Every structure is written in C-alpha cells, then in structure tokens.
Image (tube, rainbow, N blue to C red; front, side, top):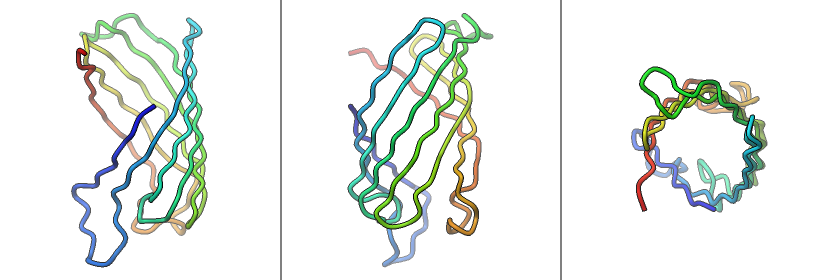
Length: 143
C-alpha cells in the first residue's frame, strides 16, 4: 500500500486553469516465481490530473532477470513491462504501458524505460500523451 504525490514543478499553469498535481493511493500485490515475477496494482485518485475528478487504474506487470551482474551493477539487470487501464470521471479512459530495464548496485536502482498510451494527439492537450523515455534513480533507505 502506498500514497504517491505527482508534482509537476516546471508546469506553468495560468491562473484559474486546472492544476496538474494530484495524489494517488495504490494497493498492490506481487509474487516472485523464480524465473520471473508478476505484479498487480489498483490505484485511486480523488482529484486526478487537470482536476478531472475521481480516477481508477488497474495495472499488471512482469519482470525477468537478464544478468546476475551488469557493468558495475552487482545487483544484476532486469527487464520488465507493465500494462494498465485508466478510468476517469471526466475525460477519455485509456490504456497505458511501459517496458524497460533496471540495474542495481547496493541500495541504488537505475531504471530506463519507454512509457506510452493508446491516446492520439487529438485526445490530449499540448502533446501531454506522447510516448517518451523515462530515467529514474531510486534508493532503498535502511529502516
């Protein structure tokens, strides 16, 4: 179970326009089958992106270890993919997906992936739904 806040720090939103920032509450399950792992998540937002009201999302994913070690990443290299569906109170429901790879070193993970939706440019303002590459770095803190 987790709570996530999406903050669009560089968004230049004119006064009176809907905000981009929002909260999302997520419940998930996962299982490691040895040769691959699978995940599932159900997410809820009480005031989704651009203030489009309640939103629900259901996502499934799979990950496969590729190498035990990769360059200086002693935690190995893993390939993964996810697919989900987003339902909105206001706006167009859509399919979303991503695929990519993660590499770990000690408590640090670097992830590189392609993220996209099935929405076309006519369904999204300002090219917000175009696919793109996302690089993230995360650390597991002791505790």
